[in-house]
Length: 407
Image (cartoon, rainbow, N blue to C red):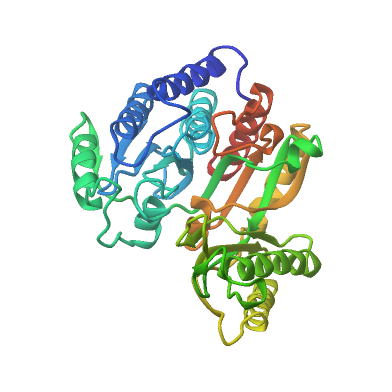
């Protein structure tokens, strides 16, 4: 187990050093390839090298810290250190530094492993700067590259990437390549939801990640004068939109208690106080662990929209995201369940409602995740919080899991 004195102090100090990079902003701001991001990845490399780990950086800025084993296979853990704008302290960062601490503790207590223990800090997961997500893990696991993209300041992705990554790769004693894939991947992460806190459970054992679909819906009506157009002669795109959203929200509840339905963006045109809205565009985000439920709900969306169309109101639906549900490795899940019992940690098996780098890694290697509670279920916000006791519990379980896999 992680020792309550020096080892925990090291984790806390490292955590605060990374967090303090955003002291002059609201919340945490480490957008990929930004100065704060570069400083965080640089510090991580220093932390690893100071503890005898070898550092490697690939061309997307993924950082790999290895404790070499006696054979040529690797057991990996890790997460990401990029953040949403004005994000919390624990999302991603906990999995990176918690993974580092687990590997350092195992090195001190058990020495050289059979399989190399690898910590990965993926370059980007959040999609906060460029319109792409999981670009770090996709580059490592799937060899996917990002198409031509620019950020809000019209800086191209490739220019930002090359400038930042070049500085990382020029650090002392840093290898430059993309390592081979590990034999397994375990991601330690905060839950980002309320279930563990509500059930007073210390550990979430993640069986998989929900499937996710997103649609863009355009409702085209007819703009007209707000004062002179009779109520029975209006073709109000916003009123139709409100009816669609209300009906879909009700139908989603009836279809499944575990189906989430969110309208997160709404754009009204002409968006003027004295003009009847002629056009509305909005998004729908739906998630569920069963792809058949999402198939059914997609048909529900189509049917509902078509039922509310008439000769003067047209509705167009376009799906632009279809991510299938992911099922994680059953053997690793069962092993972690037994280890949690041995450590006298309360646990429950659950499905993640958020996407993670593990979703990508699961496509190429046996993968599992360990969750710890998020107080009040708050995440992606400055007041995101997990107690020190829960942080320690997660690191202890990760240590036990990595020991079982690598020694």
